Length: 108
Image (cartoon, rainbow, N blue to C red; front, side):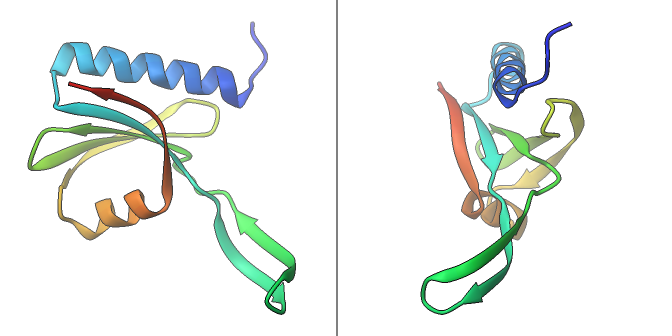
């Protein structure tokens, strides 16, 4: 059994995204990595100590269907947590786009 690394987990998530793109045919599919959230910073303009917290859905696969997104949430080890439909202009989608980095994109 292969040892867990973030890279192998990301490869499995990208494989999942490619399969979703082939089967469901959305406009595009993005694999997003949610950034760590800063909860405490001590110091002046250049902080001496910064404490960050890793977010629970570490990866998000976003399928774009025009007026809505289908979001699949993954843990750091690549296991699927769940999925949900979100409107394109919702506050949740704006928060995800602000706090995430695009790892992989499949355009149509």
